Length: 182
Image (tube, rainbow, N blue to C red; front, top):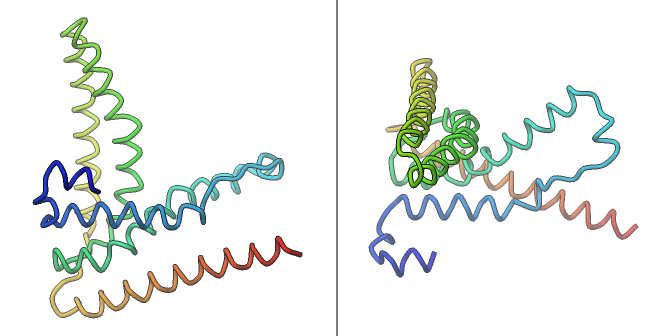
């Protein structure tokens, strides 16, 4: 945070600055509540159970960010898209594991062979285009924006959900601490 402010002091006035730091803070605050633990029981579990566990691993951080950013998003933009967690579940791995590595590889290859670098950039561009088409498809199915007269209800519900989520996580951690003493 301080590095960003040293480079650009006016970033403090940007909503993106606050939204990104709130998202990171929420993920760090709840990081202990969904850390990965592998045991022999998990390895021997059926594929359906492992798939559910993997789904929870991807879905839970998105819900944490969605709940944490609900109130600030309504404050800054006066709207809240309920499709954001679904889109992020797909977009973050595609960008992080496909598009960014291809772009870095293209950058490195550009020093040696420019034509190959351009082909890699074309592949990354195609992946971005597919991702945008997917997002537009979801929006076409019906993006749910909450605005106007529903704003105060939305803020209240986001605050209530985030409070309940935090309370449940604290109770779970407390229960784990109590059970470890016995």
